[in-house]
Image (tube, rainbow, N blue to C red; front, side, top):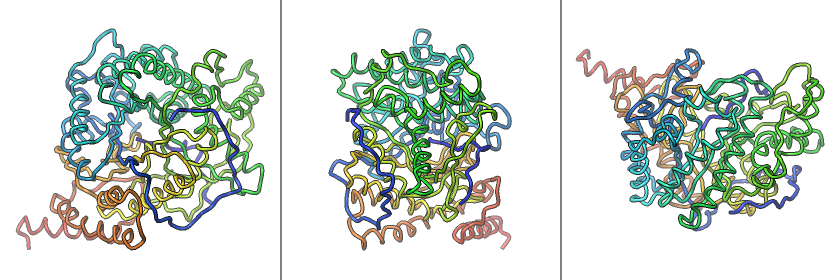
Length: 569
């Protein structure tokens, strides 16, 4: 998934071909317009997403090798409540049921990832190919196509084979470029005749920063000031090599496309008339989205990254910048290596300059010289980092349009979590989030942004990385305490389904009825949940959250039913 968190020690303060053409983004024009009733272009694709480690489970079944997340979750204290993804949603065994859910929602596409160690247990193609793993993905892809659902396949959603981490240091080692290319080439060979949309990496920012700088994510390395930059450098090279492999060996036969999925928050200047705030906001986005997008579209890192990291490296007495350098040959090799841009987006920050003296030590976060702020009025229903700021989505999409020559864009992740003491399937906050964010995307399409599809994150509640199962992004509630992992539709399922069937927001009267009808349908699902043992639907959380009225109703109903069943009333 999808997780992208801000480093906890830097808490925020409260307050399709790629082309290199570029315009100047107008920072002073922030139109927060009223709701826009209209529909998306014919052929717009609607979907939902997942990832292998977060949903499949079956961590050691049918010949699968260990991933860095299998190893990381076994270290006590790394994951909230020491949860693991060992079984998660049991998607490995329940994918047919899940495709039935997708078909009922009338999804056009399903975005999922292939587990590298499930098909190459050691990580190396030369050592062993796990045919049982291959068959699982063949069956999944075939059933999706049988149900007229287009597979959008991610090659790397964070689950590096553990043996490659142990032997080579993972993405700190340039040898990963060739090993990843071998894995991707095998996927093209086995699945490419049916898969036409490939994504090399999902959210490489999190892979680099949280995996190799802060250590919050697997493999848990804390190489401050250098680890993230080195990992990103190798990831960008790996992406380019895979794109060229597909371009030279498979494109003419398979007629598919290869892109990358970059996740980024929007950064808005605190004062849009203040040049220093504008520069800080652009620096925030260049250190986030531009870190990966600018090399892929233009051939090299953003100039502001080179300037700031180079200057701070010099002040620290280093002989060279901590930001690696691409050779002239590498720049030309990397430039233009995407057929579409996948974009993940969840939230927004206000940005203002803040000086971090070089004497405080190396850090990706300090290199940026800025502070992140949030408006305390912004809704924040779940994850501590995720505030609902819909207008930032339109701003981000227009930034992509002006910065990178209006590439073909597929929104590959967008959604909102809840973090509650117990379950409420009438998720009105998620319906409001989807309504507002999708409408801002519709406005961006009206602005001329080349958005071709949207992916809700996520289809199911799943394993949310270092937060374990304490945060739920799913359209469908998953009862993780039940060995059968039953799925229950939240109200947002019906709401999203109506957006899909209408291809947008046709008129005010119709749209206003959707939420009311969706809430009505969730009542029966709530009753089903309440009929199960109460304790199975309570979640331990690290903070006290006041339950909603609807949630209290579930609890009271469940207690009442328990007493009835036991003959005590």
